[in-house]
Image (tube, rainbow, N blue to C red; front, side):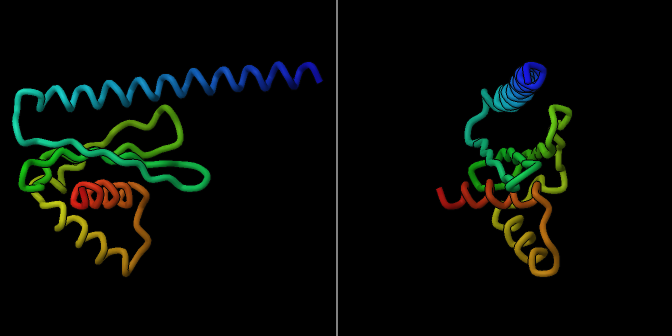
Length: 129
């Protein structure tokens, strides 16, 4: 019984450390993006997260200009601290409404990936705000 408590405490401590590392990675990445646009006007950063009940999650980060045209799109997806942001240049120079329509059309024929749902959520939140 004593061994189980020690093991559980070690697992909890390890999970806390790994969560801290992942949070620091997210903060540094967001800081890097915001610094790129800190001297520019009319650029906006939006972020949202999509989760499954159990397992992985996806975070989408989108930078748009005043006309809702995507300037940058980044996605982080995974379950572990080894998940890193990926740049998605295929969405650059597209309007948010174009991206939403594209994914809505695709959703009729297939299940969207979690990262695609995160992009839709981010774009929808921006348009509705």
